[in-house]
Amino acid sequence: MKNLYCQPVSFSKINTKMIMKMDKARKSAMMKTAILIIVVVVGGYALVFGLSMVLSTPNPLEWVGSGSMHPVLEPGDLILVQGVESSKIQVGDVIIFHQTTDYDNLIIHRVVNIKTEDGEIYFTTKGDANSASIWWEERIPASYVVGKWTGFRIPYAGWVIYILKIPVVDGLTLGNTASIILIVALLALDYFMPEEKEPPKKMEEPLKKS
Image (tube, rainbow, N blue to C red; front, side):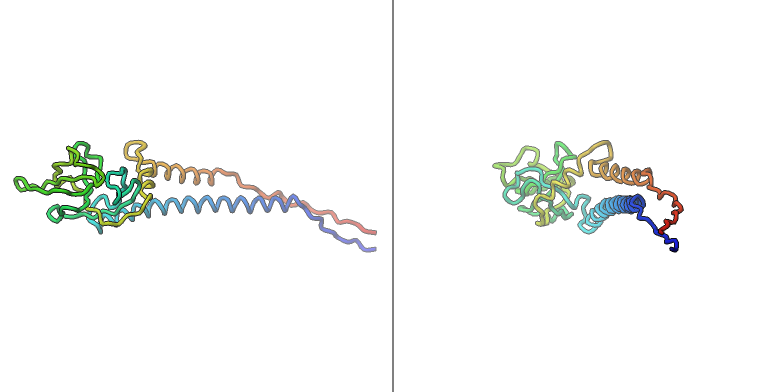
């Protein structure tokens, strides 16, 4: 009888190849995730910058943080803001302005009165749900006004803006910090993760069959 060569099936090789393929797929997925995060973050900044240019205001998107404008605006609403000249603001408009006692705090209330003193325009506002104006909104300088609400809003989307804008350290918000940490972690994991190497092939001994 002639010698017949029979190649035995090596399950260890099959498992190794499967592991290598899975490892490559996992790394590819991590890189795609990191790239997606970068695109989303950069795209978000580009969107805000573009809206700022088009709407003529540094704050084109703002979120409603209280129920003082109920039922027109609700907490968590994301609103679109249009920059406007103070002389074009009318009674009844909903404006966004810096609080006179806390400049970093933005308020969204309706204009109920407008007056001019020594050539300067001052606004009085009131929340629709409030019974009267609060003392610090009875004389708002025109220079404190950020813009006017366009009438466009997205319910609940404002909470996302609120969370992302939570300050973590000076100059960095929660959204920026989380994005940076996640991107660095994914890239580091991809770089340091050991690759599965295929073991060297062994010469198979021919099997004799009599």
